[in-house]
Length: 280
Image (cartoon, rainbow, N blue to C red; front, side, top):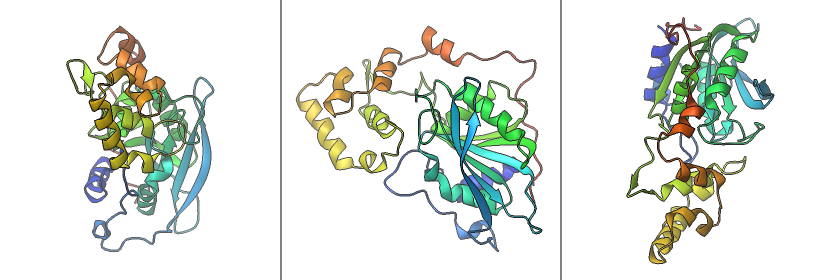
């Protein structure tokens, strides 16, 4: 069975909850395997630092499958690059590792324990490329790297793929965000959910409880409506002046600025989507 089919199967058994939510990430369902391995059938390496070309270090948690003889694993590596803090996906990392694949949960630049500043959708192409190539050179990797995830973690797969990292073998995106095209608006006024999301991704730590406080957001948004608050000032109105929110307001659609940010690197061939052999 090829790795891409394995990961698509996992999408069916592990709900692709890639946005912040009110509850924890879902546990893998028992029916995914007739004899599921024990939950501790893996090791972790916490706080692994991945260097990028501009010297910013991205933080990763590695999930390593245990081998029968206790030797170090050497498998394809699957990773998720996320702004939602890598710990949010612990159950998924455990699931992949328990089924024989090295899995890496990587915080995007400026979030979690990664250094740098978080500017949504701006740095993922180059950072994703550098993560792929770094992982491919590690002793636990057989040279093949895959990406997996949805929503923001779906977007950054496409962003990485267009940089043509040589060791990227396949991507498995779902419900990928598309900056410049999928920020819904009416008469140039966006959705109030935008500032809720920008608040969830403010700072470096998770804001899941605040993000999930629907009563707070409904009350604030209704108050903004009654007071005729301009959409461009709603970030300050809710108590979180956001540079990233203001940046999106200035470039809500694909324009010269966003094209410079997301321009493709030339390559003689498309991304390699050759199937990878399973670890087991």
